[in-house]
Length: 148
Image 1 (spheres, rainbow, N blue to C red):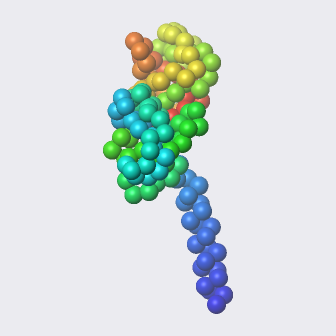
Image 2: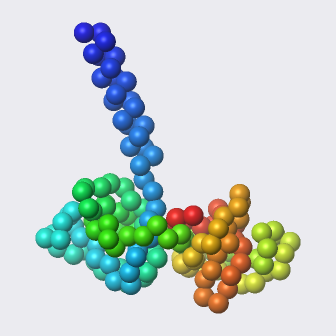
Image 3: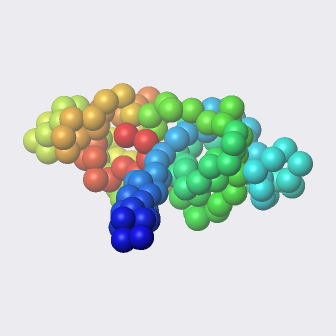
């Protein structure tokens, strides 16, 4: 009986540890993606996203649907066919600077407004190489939120 109790306690803590790390970012695959109230195509649409590569946080899953939350705390369900692993992020700081090289001493190229969508090319320790609009350069990793 003691072995069963220990096994149940161990299983409970182990499964909770797995669930704590189960949140991850994905991006929207298409220009138009429906956010639904439940995990099926029969559920009504809550809102329609119109921004390809918008990063969203996956917080749960049910068969072919993922429960997601966006940067404005809207949550709902999206079919997995509408999600992508493409790397993209939103700038979360006011007036972040894009630099030519991954250094504060390199040439500044542009200033990013808060909420600007950036495609992430690669990341090195504290810096990420991004593309946004006509600019390609490096930005501090801490100023980005999304799939890095």
